[in-house]
Image 1 (cartoon, one colour):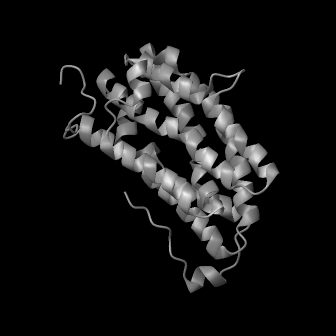
Image 2 (cartoon, rainbow, N blue to C red):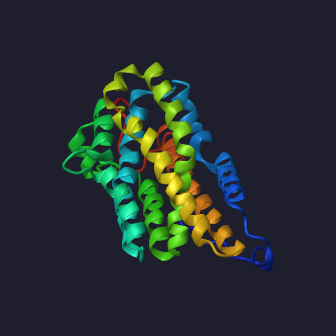
Length: 256
């Protein structure tokens, strides 16, 4: 999966700088258009139409994304020249990896996968993950390694939209899949973590994008992140919904 940074033109170079409110509005518009809340796989989930096996495939493949998030944040952390920035960003690594006082998001996601009926050791080992999942998630690491720090930070801003989706997801998972109730701690934690993180990132992008062209690069980085999330669900839909063709060596739904 090759996601390329947007090429700036003379229009973006000479256009006026967006205010904080205008920038936030454009970022929000990106979410309305491209965030994966509209993907057919998520629509099926929220309508109670996924089978246990399809939810297992989702939890397993999403685990790979979850496991890479603190790696992604560690890369961004290592690139930050400002100790104030590094202290603020370090929180994200702890949120996912945990510490002496918290189990962290990765462990919480394993609990969710276990609630679907998956073997937690298989999940942690990444057995059966779709190749397209790996390609999409690894491209996210490429973005934060190879683009500017501004773009790397901006790519995290799907957190601007995630709270609304998580609220809906909690409601629908409890309604349609009550047997998952013991595994929803991950989403509960993100309800307060994501808004705090996104506020910091929006302010960082606004303060550090010194030209309209740089603001457009930040917006494009967010578009690319949305594409990465969408591509992961495309792979799940193709393998486990329609036409239902999981590649060799990947997770198979029991009885299929």
